[in-house]
Image (cartoon, rainbow, N blue to C red; front, side, top):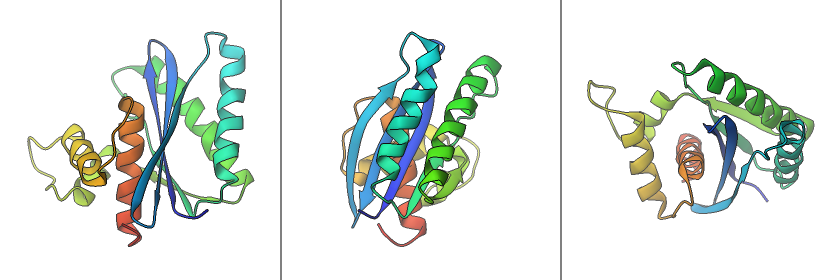
Length: 156
């Protein structure tokens, strides 16, 4: 398989939810999200195994939409650890990683960087453009970053 694998780690209730989505040949396909188990000791190892399983499908790029929960330092720490695990799995399989900030989605969504324009607006536009339905917020964000990266590389 080739294409772009989009990933986002959202923190809900003190635990991460990992969203995954593929863009291949202009088609978007979602993967089931992975929520951290209650036993936090297992959470990162399960995420590593899942990310490794997806990286073994050899995407050309893993597009990671970074968690930017600056007003919630505890959530940001949880997300940063989980993001590191996903990056490690991609690097283990020699998959290139493109890290995206939320504001980086504006251009791909055709929105100006202007007052009143939000990441939520960009995500909604990219998800709508993909024609895909998402099961949760993490998956919507993964779809958005996958579409943005595919557009950047001319694959969408």
